[in-house]
Amino acid sequence: MADRFVWINGEFVPENAATVSVFDHGLLYGDGLFEGIKAWDGKVFKLREHIDRFYDSAKFLGINLTQSREEMCEIVLNSVAMNGLHEGVCYIRLVATRGKGDLGINPRKCREHPTVYCIAASIQLHPEELYQKGLKCIVCATRRNSVQSLPGSVKSLNYLNNILGVMEANRAGADEGIMLNLEGYVVEGTAENLFFAKNGVIHTPALHTGALAGITRASIMEIARRKGYELHEGMYTVFDIYTADEVWMTGTGADLIPVVDIEGRVIGNGKPGPVFTDLRSAWLDYVNEPDHHSIVPSRESVLAGG
Image (cartoon, rainbow, N blue to C red; front, side, top):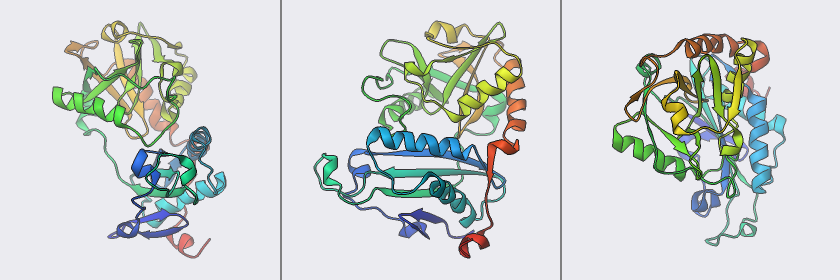
């Protein structure tokens, strides 16, 4: 479609009309939250789980959303429909800010309803060839925010910590960065959760390290258990990932993508390994299971108010 439509504060408007105030505290202070959600061929993956996490972040931040969870699900589905994205891969960004206030930081100054908007478009975090060849990563000097300041499961609008990690990877000519917490334990990538395998056993950093409770992460853990893999959540250092047989990352935008090099150290034989390949194959079947997706309505039914 030539025009993209964005749902914002109760209505669909053309992209160039989807504006927020310069006094919005999401813009001024990163005072807000978001969810990244994916759809394949008109089917939104684990929509309810994403919406539940969205409301959990809002509750933690004290942002009182006026829409019900059912209404928010409908907003997401209708955003895909209004943009005619019934085929191929679609990425949905659902955002809420504390709303318009003044130049003071005090949330009490935001006296109107929160600003809520939903964008449906395409995204490609990594070129397709890297899913076959694997990522080359660095370990970032920038540490993840302390969970004593902000829990990793809160998807706030302030991603500067992650962006600084991306900038390090860019300067090093790497594809991605791996971030540690203040104690030196592995947490995640700059925008993905991290897994590794050693002697056929799968490991992933525990959430109390500061890692995001990723929807894709949880799905891969479910798939691994279905297939009989031994799986552990724990505290790991760079030694564990340097010496792993396989390493991969997961996320809504990235799906599953292998890591073949960390700081110049070749992981395994330098190619995507058998555990990753097995899980990747099972993942493609998993996303199409009926219980895991919500069907996008037709654009005509949305326009008709159905």
